[in-house]
Structure formats: structure tokens, C-alpha cells
Image: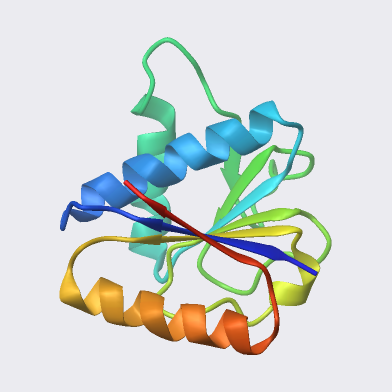
Length: 141
């Protein structure tokens, strides 16, 4: 049964959300997890890919785009399609809907900004996961 973490940011900025996704991914990798960061579009994949190269100048977080030829065994995968089957145990969901393939993950992280649309999306996802009986934690940042 997955454990669900909701990170509620006080910022309205999408850039804050992406920065937090990078930090959450880094912490998960440090603990030995494989991470899938799910976004909505190819453009978001490219933006997050660039950010993961730059977000900490003194370190590097190994990552690849899901389905790329060099993605096997990489600690962090980024994708906008379905989650890769069995390839990861932690999800960082940046889509505007709850994860449909929620059963395959040990931990699901939902990152919500203070933007009203993001808050509404977060509430729907929270209600969905709660209806499945999953343990939910909320972290206000």
C-alpha cells in the first residue's frame, strides 16, 4: 500500500514546485530509491531535465527521460506518459490528476502550490487517495 505525501507550498510559483520536486528526488535517491517524476507534457519534461542539471551547482542527480536509450538503471526518470512498470518505487506527481498507476509505488509525492487551480487539484487527489484507504501526510512549506 503506497504512502502518500502532500507538499503544500505557500508560493504560487511553478518554479518553486519544480525546485521542490528536485529536492524530494534528491532525498529519495540518497535513501536508495528509484524515482519517477511524472509531468503532463514533453515541454515540462525538458524543463525539468534542464533544472535537474542545474538545481545544485555542487552536485549532480543522475536522471534521464523515460524511454530514452540511456535510461536503464538511472536513479531518476522523467516522463509525461504512463509510469514505467516496475522501474521505480517513488513517484513525484506533477500532473494535474492523481496517479492512475498508484499501486506500483511505495511512496507517492504530490506537490501543490498556493495557486487556486493547484489547490483544487490537490484536494481532488487527496480525496481520491483517501477513498482508497492510503495513509496520507501533509507537509506545509
